[in-house]
Length: 117
Image 1 (cartoon, rainbow, N blue to C red):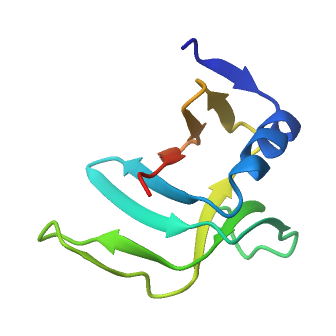
Image 2: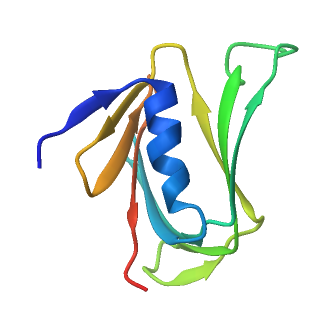
């Protein structure tokens, strides 16, 4: 299906439909690749206007739920916390191709798709 760019509002409206589902989240950042499987119990956003530096994001997408992360040995282990944070920027791009969402930031590319349940 054709990849389309979304506004944050369009992304939010479509992504909220996946609340309660099990998703796979992949993050590609330079030479680092992480993959997480999570039952998505709650989606929220946070804005932090009291940042100490530009490394801390002003906006964040919070994915809450129980999940597992793939370790260096290609085995899954429990997430250390029931929260997965995706830092968002004013320049972030949001895409949806009918099967998966992509969030492109200056530091990483996040891909979110439904996991086989």
